[in-house]
Image (cartoon, rainbow, N blue to C red; front, top):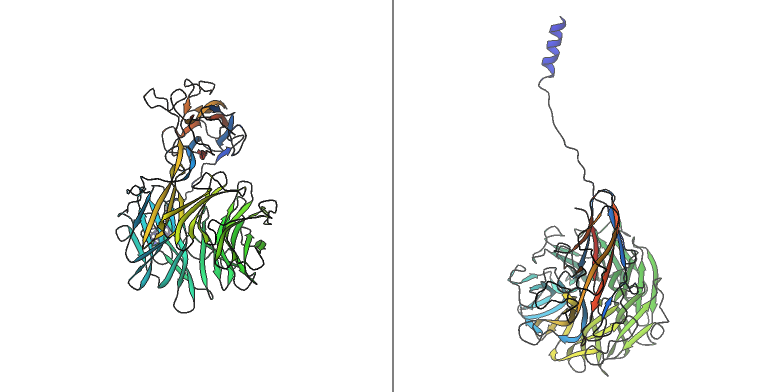
Length: 583
């Protein structure tokens, strides 16, 4: 009976249903880096001070600690711009005549109709990408163009032989353009919706210039909130989310979006914070300080349009609002804020001392948002480059060592391309162009965009006549150290000028040097001097490594330079990235 009962029970429960699941996780390598004495501006270490022409200088010891809490690690040195020479000086306003192929340093392309360029960026491959609009027949469309590093049309870019055209309706205007680390492209601006005023838009393109289907609808986000809506400035966060500023309902708008373009519901109120300081307010440019503070520059309207700076914390809460009237009757507009290495903020824009006259203007603020009255004249610097005319700094590019390239147009009857170089101490670099400014009298139009190329060169973009015009400002590179025994070496013995680094010592039993470490790192080609590698993946980028998980240690480097007897005066920089990677 028992056997029969058991047999019946077995038969009732068979066959058994089964499934399987794998439970997994990934543990990241946790690397660390301690700059020690190897920080920007360290006197005699990373700041060489004044070096005479035709002399050599070897810096004092630069110590960097590194390691990992759970893995081996590698310490690497590379160039921030990823190509060319490590040390350079920005030029004095000379156009790079080899750019564009015509011998002038400028080249114009015409996609069709009347074309206007508003922004420019550079991809890591060297490709130049412009954003603006084209008027074709009676219709105005957004036009994004791709060009080679020498200014030729790149027909592999976009959806139409070098261009991508996107039609959102009417009167589209690209206000800001930024590049992702993977070379994807984000544009923001405004479009006439034909009914209730203007909508803001964002467009994301894949690196090849085609719309990104994972962003918005077919690569496009267009939204209307209330009244006049626009995006004037964009900034990318490290996690892929997007910060933007502009206007909504006549108020300054600060937006935060998810990576796919949806409003971030965790930020402010449904992804939006507004600031009402007057009857017609707008945010024009955005910057992020090292502590996460968000800084927006723009204007507010009371009796006149007044210069305005608003600071927010990372959650969108307003920290301070500073309105700066620049004259009893003059309008003033702040276009873009920049955070300096000192923590100060400089906002660049324009003021109008009289009707029809527009002057370059800059205001400096403390880190807390107050006007720094010890700078300039009560915190303000203005300059008129054309008597009785107007200057519009339509593009502003921050350079190393807290300098700025200003580009736009000068109008004394007709617009001409214009550029100048401005220092954070409120002075102008009079070596640049003529008395600090470069007016391209042969080129009609407006310079509206600028972007960093390699070796200190600067890509210029704008409009002239009916096309997209590109140009390039040249620079002065210093040769990378090379000692191979071949003719043309740029070593301590034969090179006219040279810059390199040397590994002098290491600490830690588990730190293994990759660079040679056999000399005193003096002015001697027998010592193991090295060039700074272009990228982290290039030969010679790895300085040292740890050979045991969780091991830490440090290395001691020295940087050295030799100047040519004919070396032009000015500030030379070597933007170097120090990184720690786990295998």
